[in-house]
Structures are given as C-alpha cells and as structure tokens.
Image: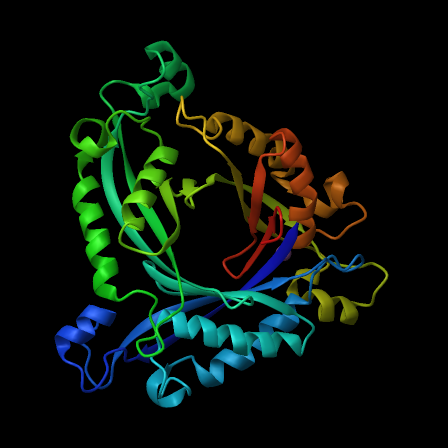
Length: 406
Ligand code: NI
C-alpha cells in the first residue's frame, strides 16, 4: 500500500506557447495558440505536489506539512507567481511552457525543495485550467489530462437482464422514459513529450477526437440515438469503456474517467474498471501532542495545534476496482458503495475526532492517520474491493492510500 500526502501551490502567470517563426495555423494545430502574440496569454495554475512515505508513529505525519508549505512558497513566489514564464523563468525562455514541461520542471524543483525538509516527492500534478493539465511522476512518466463536458439522456439498464432485474438493480434510473446527466469526462494521455513542441499529442489531434466524441454524445438520448451503443448495458462503467475504446483508436489514451455527477465516476484503463464515490463528514479536531511544549506543537503542526481545536468538512472519495459483471454492465452496485461509505464515516460526522472517536485516542487525527484508519474499515465492508481512498481536508491538503503502491 502506498500512502501519499499532497500540498497544493497556486500561481498566476503569463506564458507564450506560440513559437516565433511558425504560422498562426501551425501554432493553432500544435498548441491551440494561433491567436497568441509576443506577450502570450495567462492562466491561474494549481500544482499538487505529492509526497510518499510512512507516517511517523508519534506525529502521525509523513512529513511536516507546515515545513513543506513554506518550502513550496519559497519555490513558487520568486520564480513562478505573477511572472511571464518565457522571460522570467528559465528554462522556459528556451523550453515551451506546455503543461507537460511545466509539470516535469515543477516535479524536479519541488523534489529538491521538499528534500531539504525531509519530504520525498513522488509526483507533481499541474492544472492550468479546468480542462487541461499534466502529471509528472518520479519514475519519469508524464501524462497529459484533458477534459470534456457533455449532457445526455439515458435509461440505465442492461439488455441481458429482465425488466424486473433492471428495476431491482438500477431503481428509478431504469425508468423507461430515461433521465439525464451533465457528464464530465477526463482523458489521460500517456507518452514522451516531443522534444521540440513539448506536447505528448498536438492540440489539433486531441481536439479533433474530442470534438467528434462530443458530436456523437452531446444532447442525445444515448439508448435511442447512438447506434454504436446498441446491444450493450447502458451504465456509466460501460460508457467509460466505450469512450476509452473510441478515443484509443486516435490517441495514446492511458485511461478515462467519466463523472456522472461531481460525486460519482467510473473509470477504465483498457483492462480494469474503477468506480468512485465521494461523501463528506464534518468534524472538529486538534493536532497537539500533550507531551510537547506549545512552541514544539506549533513547529510540528502549525495552526492545527490551536489548543481549543478547529475543524473541517472532510471529503472522502472511495474507489473500488475490478472486472465487470458483463451481464449487468456493473462493477459493484452503487448503493452498496454508498452504504459502506456511510457506515464507515457516518459515526465521525459532527464529532471531535480526538476527543470523541475511539480510533484516535492514541493517534493524532492527521490526514495520514484518518486514511490509514479508514482503509481497513471500509475495505472490510467492501470485501476487499477498495483500490484507492482519498481524503480532502482542505483545498490545499489531500491524502490518499492506494492498493499495490503504484
Ligand atoms: Ni486540521
């Protein structure tokens, strides 16, 4: 199992992707930047620096996140925030500041910055907008992420089940007239960024494949109007597989994630299916070691050591993975995942974790300890199906446990 803690850093910057000497058409085809001029354009960037390790038995943390926060601020503020990357931030005077190149560079720089305070960086995820980002991994792997939204109606059902079985399994979602969702699709592309352009796939190729998919699915009744989907179960899992296979004929797709709503998604990587559901609980807590002085507690836990406590609305996202039941087109009945999550975190809702929850009597309620305690509890309720568990403490701090450790 791999445990990670992520710290977000944000910066706003201008950057120019369009290359001098290239035509507007060529810059549009490679970067989607045919309209950019010498001074470029801008983005509000978000980078998540992912640290791996084992929680220290006493502090309950992989690494002192307060120290990581300061180390990352010392990196981002002088070099990236409110700068023109092509002029102010080498090597982007020479190297195109594509999401792929930025993620790689931020991985290298955050690795050095975090090492100085004892942190081991395993990945850096950079989002340049809601629909475009990249992730660089310590293994050398780079992925590009693009997103697409579409609205569609459907009747959730499998042609291999009887009407009664469909009603039993899918409830109101199996009603004959159908229902609708605003879907959000995230596509992950994998490959070596081109040395000259700095992109894994030129913008024009990605845009062409996504536009064709959008034209096929957007504002359609999926059962009635999309012939390509006929004969197979109409579930979010099967839709994710259909989309993966269709895009994989044109693009180096590593995996797709299809959000049916902000709380629920299915993903497919060409062989395995995943299904994720998010819930939340609201709790008070306090990170404070009674054996240490106020000053020591502040050094280790920062603001979280406030003696009278503080709290969060924690979001918990559980992902199960495995193979599909082809008859029903489902990985696991959604109500089962929903009930397991409720049983696991429900008792923590509206409690003070350290004072009222037995599991934290001897362990500080750090994000690392919360996911470590929650994993066996939830995995037991799901008969070993759990593949990943994420905890969002704030927009800046998130924690995750994955089975296997990749
Ligand atoms: Ni806290």
